[in-house]
Length: 289
Image (cartoon, rainbow, N blue to C red; front, top):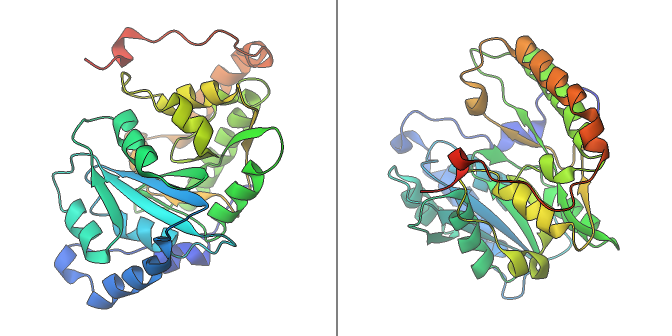
């Protein structure tokens, strides 16, 4: 996929910027609430499981985009509030989305809470600091219905801010996508991004998300799902999400970061050619205490 230099119109439509919650117009809440009304079916085909921890700044934008999903099948949305100490839950309640509070801290616990409540045949996992194109769910399920496919994921682009311009961000994303495609040769579990990741519910509920590690629960789930079929990377505009530059806030030189990433991945190229059969050893620093 070629670099993306412009922000899609649908992002501008769903992105809600504000300094204080009290400044948000009431019609914004009404619009999201109305759009969510058909996302509470009794028999959904797909369940979108969102996890949130202190996301009062982005949760409305995320839900605004998810409420606009245009699919040929019924969708339910469940948000797991993982011990937020800000006003995330207040915002969830105001728009009326189905939510659950998970008091055990961690990505795995939060994702399992949604997975256990889900009624859909397909689980579409989402992070609350991202915006999702209206075709996201449709394209994910379409791919998951194909024979021999056990999971699917996509990746994000970054919304520029005062410190990071779209040109440099596009260059970073393009190089990152090269890295992902190298890993996809035979080690897709090293490429999966849990914030835009889907699989069949029956497969996910057999393994569930790991809860004893701080990060990497997405890769662990992907490795387990390889038992049932291939993992697909949908690197298309119809599934690409958009998020803030928060994960890059400590990066001063994006071009230097790109060089380091590519150098590291090309050194591991031969490793990517050989699939991992047994599994990966956990690092002590990544174990939950």
